[in-house]
Image (cartoon, rainbow, N blue to C red; front, side):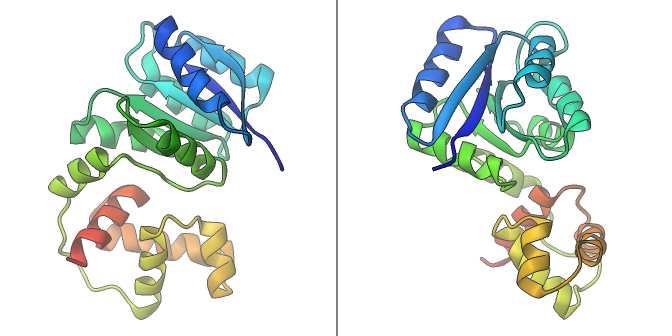
Length: 206
């Protein structure tokens, strides 16, 4: 069993220790460090090279969202799970656009947190139901122009949380081709991120 290594970031000691305890209760997850600010998280990631960062958003200094932006700029493969009390659509969009892999509310249970950490480690997006609902409320379900049959195939896989690499493997396409299709899908759905696209696709099924 390969351990998934995790860095926990929160400026409140009790919350940080609680999240670490939850994650550490699973055999396949290991907390390798903690940080109490966005700045400290950047230093800790450079030193510890974790698979996943679980990070609070409201912190002194640069804050969680800017820290996510900088962490993502430094490592395109790093799993980043935002943990927040807030579920406003504008904030969620900003955090996802900054580069978060997942977004959970702080009332999340331990199993769901562990599931999100595992997903983030493999590049899959995981969101609390409250977050998904907030995104769906502001998403427009009408594409600017119809998707091609290939784009429809890829859109369904995006909605399932598949990565570009997984989509390329499933459909026997190159990563470059998949990226081009994904860009076209985002444009046609008038959204800016894969997560927003997934919300639109899921909502259009109902």
